[in-house]
Length: 260
Length: 219
Ligand SMILES: Nc1ncnc2c1ncn2[C@@H]1O[C@H](COP(=O)(O)OP(=O)(O)OP(=O)(O)O)[C@@H](O)[C@H]1O
Ligand SMILES: [Mg+2]
Image (cartoon, rainbow over the protein chains, first blue to last red):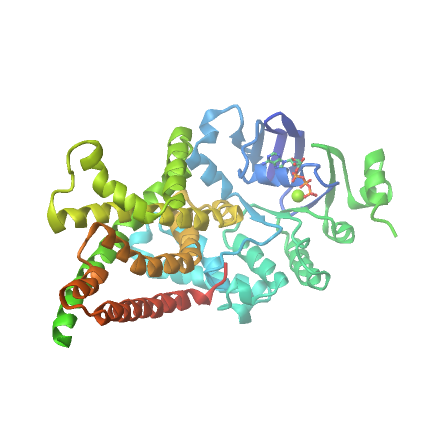
């Protein structure tokens, strides 16, 4: 069964229809790369899936369970949406780390706040927090930054900040992790370290959706590739199919721009 | 003579200090309310508050003080403030709180609006509630941003208190000037400057310390 299934997702901003009915599904452990020209709706798609924008129409299923239906009021309450968000993680183009917290605190903050809501929290605060601290350190280690634990974001390079941001998303163990152009705000010499972390996650079978302009990377890491164009998925296929033998004329034209 | 001057000036300074403290304590929460109103989704409220802020910030505090003190008596025929020093003090406080609340509200608004929306979004996708986002993420960043402009306003307020001299509130300047009439000496007036300097000097140091405390992160 698909871990994530998106059906007929649409998004309008006023009169502008940005997503015109997007359908796709994703199996557990797979990595999906989303490519496409600027303005095609890639960011909007990720923002809709994380409910930073509320889709105008469409449905979202996680592990076969309907979590969102634009036509069903009950799935639109603030409480419901907050709950649904926890299925997913989102890594932003410009990191959005919290500047007043250290790398470690950035990672541990959200799980600690969530732990407070659990009924068993009252008696076991210390044990629960210790557990979260331990997990946060492990994840910081996984992105190769245990030595930067107590550094504030402004003391880290862009690449390091983005790795902390990835760790911050991972600590909540999302079913699917989304990336919106995770390296496009970085200097070229810093993209490698971030891509390496993402590749490592792919090897560990994290389920991921990655919007990227790094074609070589998409080719290497993705199980499937979506080409988005003007609010629809114009073509989907294996990296091999999309990159060496695209069928859609617009996919061809788009990829042509990345050649040589 | 010196002891006499010192006693009189200190008495005036106490009034200045009171005016300063009450204005600060009153204007910060009022400023916060005006700030929230001026960013409200209720259009008429927003428009009215923005207009008031524009008027208050665009006209001299001295004029506002004169209107607030004399206005009720001359226009409405009844002196709201009561007679004597107490009435003058209340009128001054009201004028100062209104004036400073408007300035503070704009500082608060600037501080809040300067926080990139990505900060809230990052909190939201991590499952935080609106209030967690405000208290755990936004608030500290807003504080960091508003401390320097607030410090400037607070130092300005020290000196602005002397404007209340215009309605003869018996603050520091008034106390110094009194010796010109009574004893024909001007040095007590000059000496009031020492009070202002020392007081604003202390505040500068304290506010600087607070600013330094927040230096551990950058926004
Ligand atoms: N909040 C919004 N209000 C109005 N229009 C919006 C909004 N957000 C996005 N759009 C519009 O939606 C369209 C798609 O934008 P989107 O950011 O999703 O594209 P993208 O594929 O991510 O592009 P890029 O590769 O440049 O990041 C654009 O025309 C954009 O102007
Ligand atoms: Mg985008």
